[in-house]
Image (cartoon, rainbow, N blue to C red; front, side):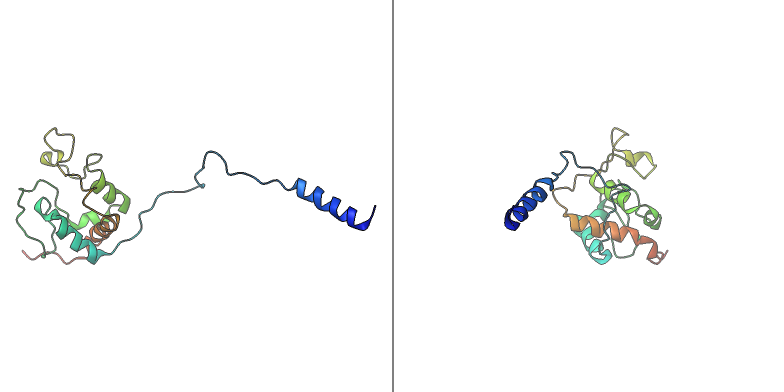
Length: 148
């Protein structure tokens, strides 16, 4: 065998042993994976709360939002204790308000006493606004207490 022929044969053998592995047909989650909501911008969240007029149903004790709620206090007060809740829970409370309700008073549970009266904001709110509102809520505990 010539040296060239042996080299070509070796290349062919090596090439035939190289197996290209296809992606699995069913994707698998990495071990230990858990969704975590990215941080937002608290100042932009405050502006988004104002834009969405959340204060119409929720009292927001920062002094910058109207004290009297136009809808009569339908939603729970967004007190500093909300800053202790996980970001993911706060986000879900906004995008899926009927799943879990943090308030315990009966009028927070809607007319059927099993769901929230909060409207669907999915077509009105961007993902960025959601992240920013959650960030603002996470910083409620940082705000000074309202003056009596």
